[in-house]
Length: 145
Image (cartoon, rainbow, N blue to C red; front, side):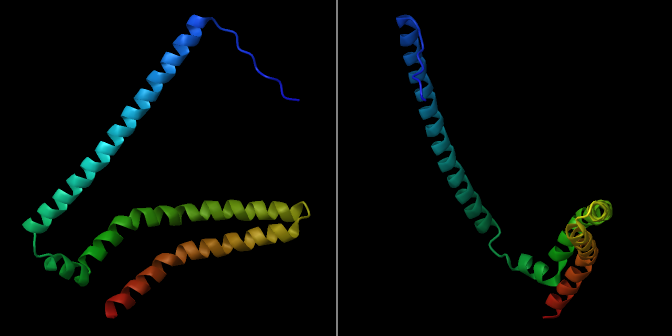
């Protein structure tokens, strides 16, 4: 069932292979050492940076006040508007394609799967179109609290 694989090579090739393997091991060990040093350096740099920022900008209450007033929230919402519009625009052709696929399943006799696909595509389309409205409602509720 299992046969031993025999490889024929000269002694010179065999000895060269061992040297190459040792060189690969050394390179891997150096890379691991470099990664460890890089991680430690990054950790120290982040710590020093955070410490310097906290000393330089000791009072962060103005940032918290801006977030409470909704300035940060408004900027984040504005930044994500193109992505939201893209997803809403893509929901129509994707939903239509899924509904057409469901119709094909109904036509070939698998009506349970086809009607399920049509139903899920319709619910998904409505949810995608309504989620920004629901999120705006939740933001307004959170502001009133």
